[in-house]
Amino acid sequence: MITYVNTVMVSSGNAAVVDSVASATKGKFIFYDVDNGTYSISADTLRFKIGMGTGKTAPQINPTTKALDQVPVIKWSNVINVADIKGVTTHTNAGDTQDIATIDFSNINDGLVNLFAQGGKRIIVRLTFKDLPTRFRKWTESYEYVTKAAEISQSSDITAYKNTIAEDVVTMINKEYKRARVKAILGNMLDTTDQSYVADDDDIAIKGDFVFRSANSGTTVMLRALTYDDDNTVDSLNWANTVRFNVNLYYTDPAAEGWESTNKHFPDGVTIDKVPGKIDSASAKLVRDREAQAMGYDGILNRGEGTWPIIKPDMNVKLDETYNSITIEFENMYRAADDIFRKTKQTVEIYVSGTTKAITDELDKVL
Image 1 (cartoon, helix red, strand yellow):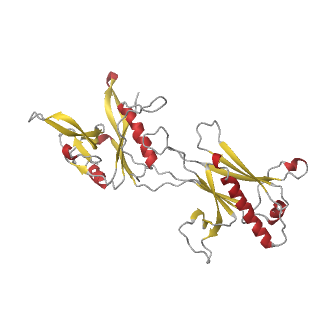
Image 2 (cartoon, one colour; image 1 turned 30 degrees about the vertical axis):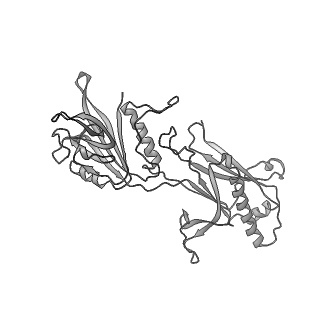
Image 3 (cartoon, one colour; image 1 turned 90 degrees about the horizontal axis):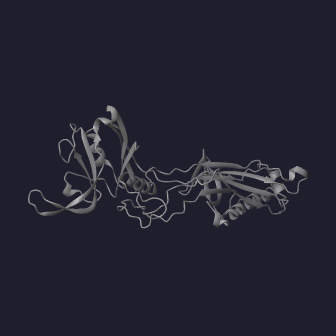
């Protein structure tokens, strides 16, 4: 039994509300008072519907003149009982960010640097991905770097060797482009409380007072999640998703004796920090998915294998737009078998690429 029904409306530009069917051009909204039969609502409205112009017209016989007219086709929501509205939520798009993790080698133990400088030590960066629903468990990718032999005689050599490790780790990860799900960037961690610090627009806040700044030479590796491969089309069978991952790091000394040659150790002094990404609830590809899924409630089942050609109404979402949203939640009551009262959970989701004020002003009249 269907217990949750969604209606999704997507419009480009600022939301505009009209008061007649003839004015309901593409992307414009119209409110209909079901009981009074008017295309406007007020504080006395008990039931209403929300419609959006599709930009198409359909032939209709004018009942007065008997002439053939072309009238706008309007996509309507289900009837909304004012008394059954549970809530209205507005949302302003805050943009999308990807998962970021940093590996800071700047404070690695000096004795450990001397060990690495002997050469032949294995440093493994292990990434654990959490966004693959086709895997029974979390999927991991390991990148192995073997240290190079170097002469360490003074503190400047230690600093230079730390830079070498970070630079080589970045190169090691980026060269595996065929299996890459992250991009490695070289740079440094900067303390914003330091008097010598000068802010830069490209600085990325990582933790507390520290930011990451990319550079040609540095001791910090930043890993940024790549966006999902997609055909970047509106009529797509892909679902929007984002890469989620964690980072671990360890080293082994194959030249050590016995069990120690395979023991895994975390490098003392290395710092790993994670900044989770945030995908906005009104991100264009999520809006695309919501619009396509909502068509299922209209009997338009275009998803799955063997669906070519895809036959469905035109999608209104544009992937290069930034959307804001309004969500209306309501539970209309109906009388079921044996005189039982039931409620159907429903929502109307409205996405517009401009301001939503015109719609919220109308809804304020009945709330």
